[in-house]
Amino acid sequence: MTEYAEKRAVISGAGQSDVGRRLHRDPLDLTLDACVAAIDDAGLTTADIDGIATYPGPMDTPPGFSGSGVVDVQDALRLNLNWYTGGLDLPGQLGSVIDACLAVACDLATHVLCFRSVYEGSAQGEGGRAAVMPGGGGRGSFRAGSFMQWVLPFAAPSAATWIAMFAQRHFHEFGTTEEQLAQIALNARRNAGLNPKAIYRDPMTMDDYLAARMISTPLRLYDCDVPCDGGTAVIVSRADTLADLRKPPIQVEAVGTAIHGRPSWDQFDDLTTMACRDAGAQLWTRTDLKPSDVQLAEMYDGFSFITMAWLEAMGFCGRGESGPFVEGGERIALDGELPLNTNGGQLSAGRLHGYGFLHEACVQLWGEAGDRQIPGDPEVGVAAAGGGPLAGVLLLTHRR
Amino acid sequence: MSDHEVPFRILPRVIDLNRHFWTGGEDGELRFLRCQDDGTYVHPPSPRCPNCLGKNVSPEDVSGRATVVTYSINHQQWMPGPEVPYVVAIVEIVEQEGVRLTTNIVNCDVHAVRIGMPVRVVFEEHADGDERVWIPLFEPMKTDGEQ
Image 1 (cartoon, each protein chain N blue to C red):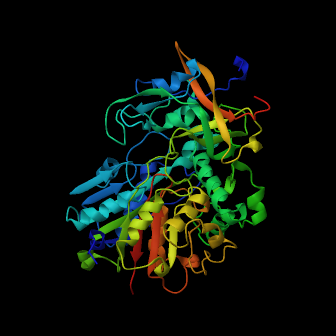
Image 2 (image 1 turned 30 degrees about the horizontal axis):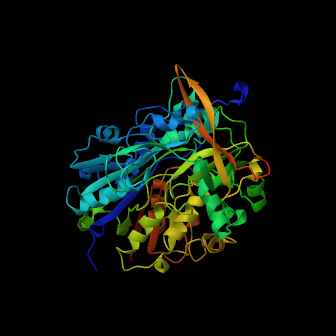
Image 3 (image 1 turned 90 degrees about the horizontal axis):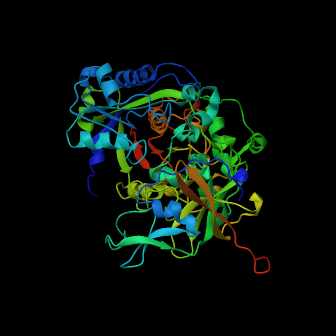
């Protein structure tokens, strides 16, 4: 098999700030907590870091969506950079990490600090999601342009509604049920109970799930992730730097970044799946490993249905079969055949926006997950992020 | 539709490229750019035909008939707007597979909406300063008996 470039990249450290519903702390403070923790975890110093990658770069709106950009972190840590990137037009949030893998693979950088931070919880304040809707709720001179002109005039400002329509189509074509979809949320909550940093840790039953208010059919409250404050960082290093590192790093085995359908929430060819279909298929062309080799999957749950789409996209089940796959929840539990979203995902552990999945995959592969550590010293994991037209995925290995 | 029934909506920013779409309702017509060389409808509007890459695209009326591809009954009041619950749907125009609009299904019970349901356009007029725009919404096709 071709020696793909990402195999020259490893993840050498991971770090995370405090995570909370509303911490009311300076977002750069949270970002730097994560970055310093990741650098330290790798056994490196700021003098070793010569690259930065982040998503989405500085943005004022929606409020709290971007805690810091490249410039903020470079200057705060006084880094001398050989390469950097930060932006929104990427294959999902983890597209920035994949860029870092490519940068080290072609010797533009040696140790890249990758980060994502959010403060959406604090930014919303007591106003809830309505406080952070596009255009300040649309009063005044705001007029919708670009893609938003095709949804905002129809009172569909939230991805909750857009994803709900994918779920509805999936229910229609494949007979997927609310109780099956619920397993994504129930599994997340079960795992969050074992994660001291998770936001929602109280047990949740199927009755609790079904009794929660409807947001946009078929998505209920607990199908939607919880906005939070927090920063997450990982260090991507060139694989030949092992001697500089504190602990055996995690190997990047393969990545997926493809989108072959139209890059749109409503024009994509198949509304039962998303860009993850193409990114997932691409990933398996870049490795000898198979879906059956994967021992843990940390896959985006901005809304529960997105995880269902990723399960199919990654070949853990067939197209349209994610409902029966998660039925009952045993298969995706911590002691099941494919432990899923082992820290509680964004649904219960907080909307760290993509990077939380990668952080958790690394922590599990290093065997550092504490009470929620999955048994059997797992060696192969998946970290996937993005919904709708956004999708980026990494296959990670940690051979002992 | 009388004025007091028209809900608040965020309005589109009308530019040369999309004006035909947002103002076609003045004539009661749903309009898309169409390639005059190979007949491809182009949506969202683009200066070139995505099929032949030619620049010979110009607005054309379509029938206004469409099919519900998927939908959601939205219960969350995200911002000032239509009274909840309301239906957000993706509809596909009958003229070309894959040409879709996100829209609202109106003039029926929210629970009556189904995937595959035939619908037709109905316009909601909004004043925007000195300009006006017409938001294309869809309603169920009436059965023959009702017209």
